[in-house]
Image (cartoon, rainbow, N blue to C red; front, side, top):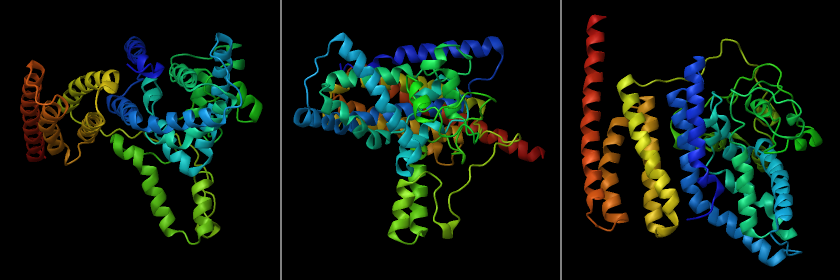
Length: 412
């Protein structure tokens, strides 16, 4: 099994989400919405499973720089690992900051900011393409002589630290906040209030923001999300939306220089003939969160299916290195298809039932014949029973929903 601190921490992540749900029940304060939380976790799933391929790019590149350009050989002693942890967080600050300040890079990071809630599930909401725009920020560590395994471990711990700061259930923490990043500091980072935008980029140590002029204290309660709401529970679309919009804007722009500026300037940049830099909109008191809801029956169906998908995804992530490249590709495609189908069901997309039936048919066939190689063991037959029952329940819910709508229409 690949020693990845992020993957190994998955049980802890979900335990903390469970605690937060318990707090929600006790305080009777709405922390989670099912549709938003599932979308957050779906983005995390998509990022992790596609990361199996993207990490080949990032880790191979780091190893290449280390082998060919390292100035020293820094042994992985306990004190050197502490130094590496601090330096990894320093370069994370700059990778993160530039992901906010460069439009092209923002397309990889914007996914993390799209949720209009703020809870532990938001920590899991990561963009699948972000690694493409950030992996090279860490090359100085390879040049200094920190080996690849030590870097993967310490940078992974920097990421793991940041999970607990995605919550509203923890207030300010006194002197601890002078040096360390905390929930209060990071709530600011996720706010779309004009005074909070592009502030507090730190991962672990807030001192970087204090040093480089990007620190902002939490004052009024942040309003979460991005200035132009995504308005979708589709985890594939939320990863692509920014780039689709960029392509449309570039098509309208005249001149290579304008196009280049648009790509590498801050999000919202426009040439003067198109109005110049777009202003950051003020937060309005009557702003409503996007909250497209499916019916109770479909929501329950999605929740049950999603728990099964989570189990399958965890199994895949822990066993991925034992599979061939073709098997990995098939498994990743099935997982993405599964979370996409759940998102469309929550949106009540007109194609959602058809896609879900297709998923329930193709999943056992693909796993049985392409991943298990036609080994018809009890697990294989169990998949077919699961799919058959799921299709039956889904069609029953669909018919019930249609009948309810027709009766309501007749009553009106």
